[in-house]
Amino acid sequence: MPTTPVTLPVSDELADLADAVGVCVEELVGEAVQRHISLEATLVRQHALRLALRHQELLKRLGA
Image (cartoon, rainbow, N blue to C red):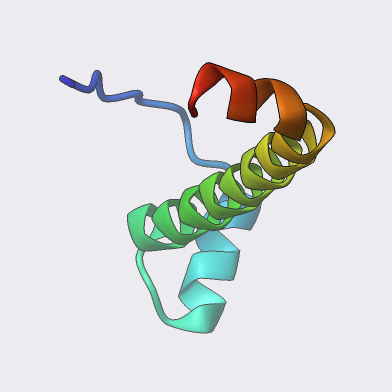
């Protein structure tokens, strides 16, 4: 799936934070986005498991 780059202005605070932790702004933002995606994926897995358990009998009848 192709991705479209997003360009946003960098605030002074974000630049200062990146400098303070010794990384570039792009790396800091990339890590934050990866953490967010990981948390969202965990939530999706939890909901999928809950739904699968709730509908276990139906899934068995359907052969899933």
